[in-house]
Image (cartoon, rainbow, N blue to C red; front, top):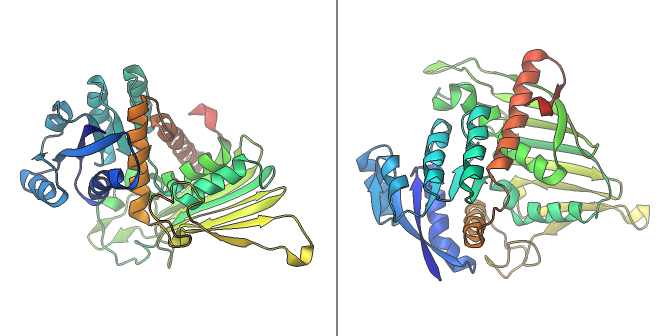
Length: 367
């Protein structure tokens, strides 16, 4: 098994998740490449050294250019704030290095378009981090839909709802400043990506967003607390989505319902190891949603556990991402979701914000 040196930019919440994933993936999946934690980058020498020691990296730096340019770093994972994504990715691509970038891709539509162009010009593997759609249950839902098991799709409802800012006395922070850090920039990308993965492209939409608590202890809120949209998919189905960080009681409300001419699907990330499936067959008296517990028969489950119903967790989604990234590098071919897919999510976000300003339906092709 060949080794590959991994450099991770950012050692906080997501940096740790990716470091753990790269340390674990080879023991869980039979990957052709074995990742080696070569270097971690953080904002100060002290924090970088702390992450190095905690996560098992060989070296540490507080300069992202040192990491990207180091010859022992053969693939780059970007887990830093959105406004840093573009410069780092472009520098890595110029050196021919594969890049995995956390969502959302860049801080603007202009950023993500430039990152897609840089990836295409370099011709190297690129991937964007949408982990929730990688649960075995949601992968199975995608397969059921693609195989026509619930017929022609007529309707989609999705949400990404949490309550970490439901309390108006929760203090202001970087999350309450700038639209890139608001609900449309932070939570919405996950469910929009999920909708595109399950349903296909969106053609038009109408959306709105709102700041519920305009001031918090420590400062003014300058971005959105929740947002919603109605949309039309290219396959003709109607859809609606809601995103919120003030949805009291919801902790990880990444959820969707999909209706088809032969059946329906329901999923909720708070119960991520179950998928609910309705089939329009048999006597009416015995029809109903069936709860399917994920197990070895479902995508990417068996390497973690041989027991049905035992379940996978959040960190396992990141390990699946690491596996996909390594497989893409080994094959020299892109694996979904690429930077292009991340840019498609940003197009929908830009259209939603434009629709909110204009108060009307927006054609996605304008973005």
